[in-house]
Amino acid sequence: MCLVVVAAAVAATIPSLAEAGPTPAAARMSPAAEAFSHTTRSTPWQLTRKVRLDFPTYHPQGLARVGDRLFLSSVEIIEPTVKYPEPRDGYDRSAGRGVGHVFVMTRDGRLLRDIVVGEGTVYHPGGIDYDGTSVWVPVAEYRPHSRSIVYTINPRTLEVTERFRYADHVGGVVRDPSSGTVHGVSWGSRTFFSWSPTGRLLRSGANESHYVDYQDCDNSGDRLQLCSGIAGLPTAGGGSYELGGLALIDLRDNSTLHEVPFPYFSTAGHVATRNPVTLEREGHTLRLIAAPDDGEEVAGTELLFYESQVS
Image (tube, rainbow, N blue to C red; front, side):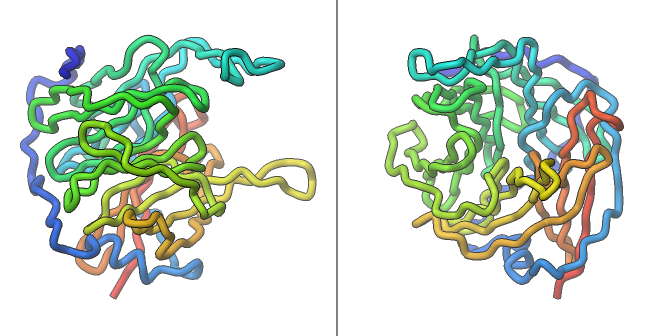
């Protein structure tokens, strides 16, 4: 099924998709995943660049690299959800109102398109992924145990296509090019899902890792995904602390192959892996790109570029 979406033109010309090609399925690990597998909690990362996004960004969710472009999903909240004193019709809160966005931009933060996704109370985009052909975008109600629509965006034409619907909150998706299987996580990433490309559920099961909740994942080679996330933990003084982390996961059984904390923070004080994250490798440099802060926070949304040297 196809969904007609309005893409607001921001630039008359979109740059070509330099270096955008199919992900090689033969590789067991992507170069970034291979480098990440050798990191530890002692690995030094240097913040090398900050790029302020000077357009309304709302609450960013997922980030995907497509050649020389970045795709950033975000939720615009018009009416916040409200917790119920007691569950109603299986829900713990109201649906609220909002608009789902996928921003297409250059690496220096210039907005090229604003693509609106979702329908009705399904307005919350999650973690997104580029599989070498399409950008996969889940959009869900902003509450657990709800419903979702999974879309793809053609990165050349920016056409949006509905792929399937699922009766739960899907907070992020990855498509494994080697098998064609689509993988997702639930609210708080407490459940892993696997579907056929048309949405037939193949498997669901508990996430056995309780380190962080995954917010954004990328396919990272043959049946692998590299995920980033956050856990809110209490402090001795009664406050809270954001623990950030990254994990390499085997999609065949959802086992964790490698995970490390990421103790770096944004201008607004959020851990860098709070929401959108993607990693890339360039020679001996492993680069993490993140956008942890919301548009209305102290410095707005900034793209943060962290680098670490690998052998």
